[in-house]
Length: 466
Image 1 (cartoon, rainbow, N blue to C red):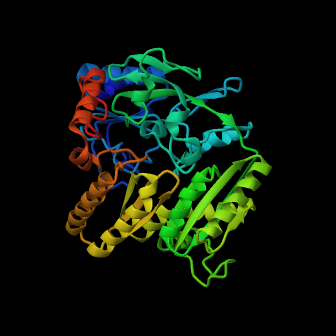
Image 2: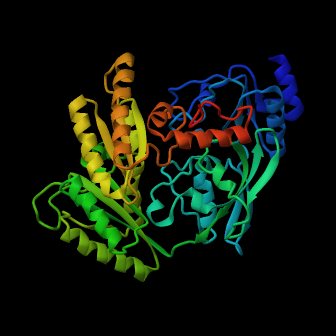
Image 3: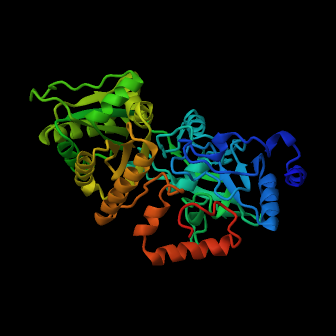
């Protein structure tokens, strides 16, 4: 251990940024903190040169390296499985350049999503990717190709990455991509890194695409008597070219938990339609653009909503009221976690299969007695589930969770879906991925890993790697 520390001090001149004893448990896990790894050293890098030096050293000595940012992931992607070095990039959090003429911003990977969004919006620009966890780092968002609520209109993180500075497993520094809009100059190497969960290279700079900030944004809350009616309406909204920014679905059962956690009350009475029913589900939408465009979209969806069974239609023009309603949606995972340990699940199904899949989830929950709370992005089929532990002992919880996840993921594949939409695979979904994935696809993934990291030092025990 003393030798390792001495070697690392030659690379990182500040001993306070190297920890080799009593490493805080949070750095050995993910946000949930339930899966614990082990490591010989924790390093806080502050420059590309330091990252390169650490990787050159690790490569020479065949030492495992686990990159991490803000540590907000939920599937164990930052759990060090083979010891070695934890390479923390959270202090590489600067905005390096705002180029308004090319609509790009260049940042270090440790900058938090919330800080980047606030910075560019204050200057009349907009970074659309908007995953629920605003405390996540941009490097983490890129490494999982995070999507979020605005994906239905604006796409996912991949669509806003113009270029990356990378350090490869052997310490080589390289740049993939540029500020240019178009690029067919060779293989699109940056796309290998986006979504690779730190298994192929370490990101040290990010060139990101921006767009002009929309003039007006408004949300609409629509209560429905049941989930089928609500999700069925979503397809009609999309076909009508209403162009929503976000389309979220929530069942009443999960909204209650969010209300209690956030201290906000959703309307659930008979509604303006006078149908005398209480809401059992909600669709929450947002629209942006010029004021006149937004008003037209809101009115178009109003007509469609009532034609397709909504109980009410509530435009949220007051920003404070909109923020409160969205606060409930944003707090759902934490609200469930406050009641019981739970396994947060992220998967994606074809958008026309969303309601069918949620019915399957509810039936599975009733049949097995394990509570499953569902919500998510109705506009792109991204379903989030909280599988709740309740009062089960550890052995029972692990056994029943595994059985239920096997059924959930098997059904996901049966209807043409995938077991991760934006959280990644990490170590939590490895076995389920290998159970269903095409062996030919897995073989190609491992060939790429072998070519770029033949010593397998980068995050070797997560995702697709056998």
